Length: 103
Image (cartoon, rainbow, N blue to C red; front, side, top):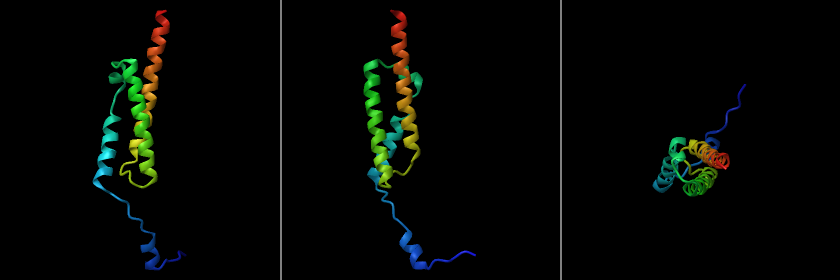
């Protein structure tokens, strides 16, 4: 048999999430930068990849902070950003291995 909670307790448990326009824009910006494919990344130079890696790590950090403070409207951005970081690492490793084969 389930125990019913009084209505006041239910109302107290509701937590309002701040949904400001700037937070939504930040999340949309992060999601947009995550859309790089491996083909696009392979066309970049190593310096550009290092810059993209730093930016992706920064975006991941910001998204995680937003998630902890309940400001991130779409949590899938974190997973996509992690995949982007791994993809950049993979392309950098490929470029490194190509250089060592040439020598």
